[in-house]
Length: 210
Image 1 (cartoon, rainbow, N blue to C red):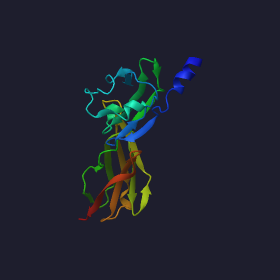
Image 2 (cartoon, rainbow, N blue to C red; image 1 turned 60 degrees about the horizontal axis):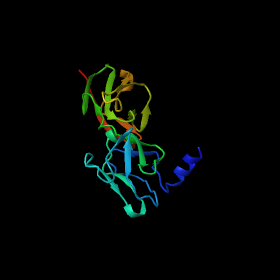
Image 3 (cartoon, rainbow, N blue to C red; image 1 turned 30 degrees about the vertical axis):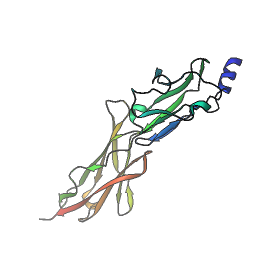
Image 4 (cartoon, one colour; image 1 turned 90 degrees about the vertical axis):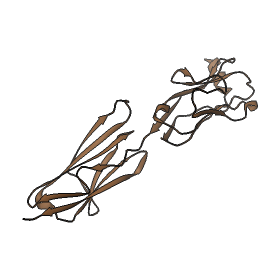
């Protein structure tokens, strides 16, 4: 146990858990002053390469002043495949950093309302609208807005995609015929932690009177 305390004391900087949005650059720090041996970066238990040679990972680079013991991992543009646990290891000293979880968030694609941008109804018919926001991590939340007010009568469902990480969200809104006016605009807004202000689309209601 004392050996582990001494080992962790040799790192002046270690990678920390980090949350980033896909497309952003990332730096995972690793500084081992006084150590001049081989340093490996490990991703989900597999070595990325030896020393500064990460040729198999074109978006990855080891940066910093090598002579000062800096071996920071720089990721040019974070992608979903980078969502993993990383470690920095000093081989000759048999040292490893704490494991650091890199979580990559993905904003939803632009939401789409089926049948937009103009939805035509016969007078007396209720309104059913469906909006979907796809390929998000975490799943997008969807709200409906009319005249500046949030409509709370929607139903939601989420589907996990084949990659096991991204999700698509579908929301269906029902409005009774007595509560609809021609010319009204209804907004679908989708958001998640990657786009907290959300993305939105809208439709205009056209009631056709015979």
